[in-house]
Image (cartoon, rainbow over all chains, first blue to last red):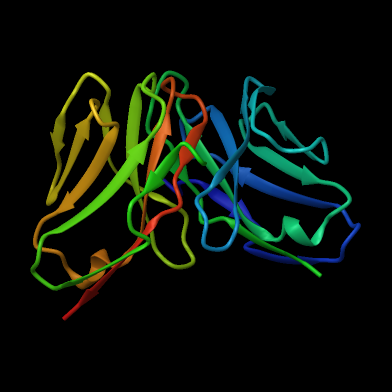
Length: 112
Length: 112
């Protein structure tokens, strides 16, 4: 079992650009959540997807959007990147009805 | 992540000592609490969880205590090892399966 996998591992983008991050959940998991972790801080919830729909959203602007595919994998899209979007983006998956969330290693996004 | 916080940003212990990491939460309606360990360059790793109807839960070398009266959560690590060096986060889940709310973390350093 590969666990939660994220790609790419590192990414550098220019301010104003758009970025797409990808996540494959742990086998058997159908619920995917995304978190943003700034340096030295705890992860902040962005949104959660289940059955290809956004089910819960944190306090993030509309520049942050996502998608879940029929195979449960997910994408996080960020438009009009700001320097403050530089962070580690984490994907977590779990089984619907389960409580334990498994995290991927994250994508380190740097906006210059 | 302002509702779940930690008392100390750093904790230094000697190998073999017992470590206690503390966390305060503000929402008495929270149902589920989790401790995560995050090593450098990795995503958070589940350590142990506890539901609000419990006061104590034990795992392998770890114990979580929940004091609902003062809204306090602690993680005890027995016989701390150098491999335990990491950042530890407590997280709050107001309803199982919904967004995790993380605190800022405590960096545990274990010296030999």
